[in-house]
Amino acid sequence: MWDEAIANWEVPGTVEYGVYQRIAKPDTPLWRRHTRGRRFGSVRAALFAPQGARNVCLGLARYPRDRYSGSHELFLPYAATWLRGASHAFLVRASAPSPEVTIVRTSEVEALSTAGDEQTLNDILATIFGQGARTHGVRILAENERILTP
Image (cartoon, rainbow, N blue to C red; front, side, top):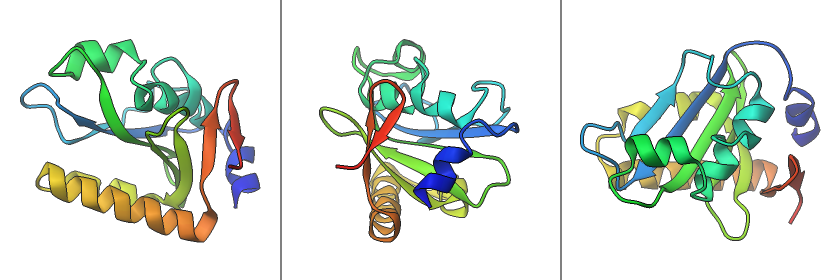
């Protein structure tokens, strides 16, 4: 599955992207989606661009910190990206020194906007990540646009 998912990084189409941000400004959705498809040109970019999943999970992305954070820090424990219409998505979890990533069913991350509160959303994301880890394993979202096995 990993080889297939990585091989499709540059497939043209609409790139979906979602993030869960803690300590956000008031009225910021718990699971914030970027669905217009213009934010990132590819799934690879959504993972590794300056505002992509790797950097947001490391607290390094300026735009979400400046625009949505309710503090001077960026606390994004999870981010996901997928190609619209694909059956699987990359789910990224904050971890030091590099974020962890697994593969999950797209339908699971598309349904996250229905989580009513922060604890429920956190529990759902942890469960989805765990299921992906058991099914596909966990890898490291490393520097230089690489996904490494631990």
